[in-house]
Image (tube, rainbow, N blue to C red):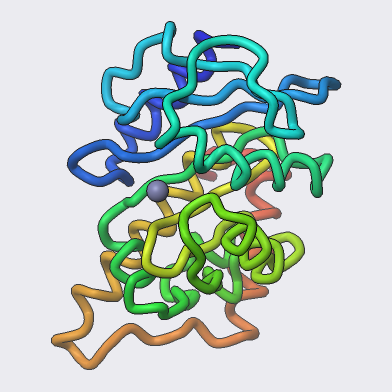
Length: 218
Ligand SMILES: [Zn+2]
């Protein structure tokens, strides 16, 4: 699974939803196990396979070397796996536009259709601030999670994404960043406007209908 973790880290970087220094972490749950693989390196850019570690969901390091600065955020990942059997991948980044909302402690609204289509019709909520990876921060994350919503802003810190598969988690990270960027660009034009409730449902239904019958144009 180490290669898979590196592949996901590279996909996060390729998506562009990451800060210039590449800060962030990727973890993958070991299917059917009580552990995860986790990026122990300081940056997701050019992350080395030998810096990937294996950690039990109780936080015990099982394989590899984990620097203290990275160990501090492990609980953010393990808590999600421990609480939710459906989660297979957790990503954390400081993607710049979404992080702007996180530092402003403002939720991201459903300003672009993709958010409605991918399970975020009410946008992305904000978890209150606690020192990164602390019990306080993890409790705030648990309190802010909305069932079915695969993303969270971490106040004064960054973004947390969690989904069944790494592909979905990476995609949601890119969609959240895109919505945040568009909203910031729209400030000079009067600000982003929320999609009306009935249209959010319509966007989701249309996406599901296309998924059902394929996306070929007729
Ligand atoms: Zn961080």
